[in-house]
Image (cartoon, rainbow, N blue to C red; front, top):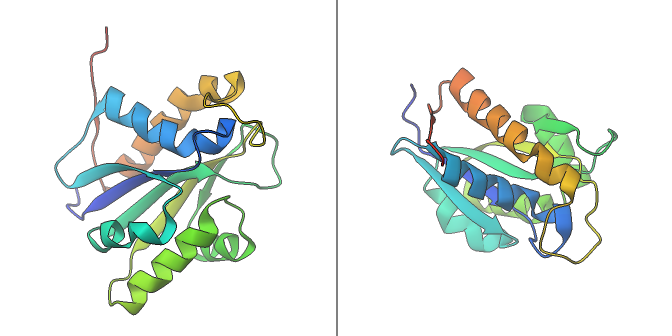
Length: 165
């Protein structure tokens, strides 16, 4: 396994139904998996540029978020490389405007962060309530398994499932 410093960052507003999906995904990953020392899991909320010092301490950034794309609600997106740049330009993720600014600022400060966005097409992101929609909540375990598999396949991290009672 690669020992790059990996940050799994959940972003979103937990007060707006599925907009908080990325934060809820990080919480799930923290509760259901043990992670190696080189992996950090953080609730980035809607902090934007205030995340710069956190991002300066990582080599690989995996952002968990909602993405507004062409697919039906519940679809999963993996955005990186050229797709990530296009996505960030078109603001497909609800928080990527701040993310783009933060990544550019990190690069200007001499630290280029290699980033991936794993996102879910939301069912509802307009209703003010702190719970995910039932549909998004039902997809949370499957989404998180995809994140764990992605990290393992890329040699970034091996998470160990925790025994839950």
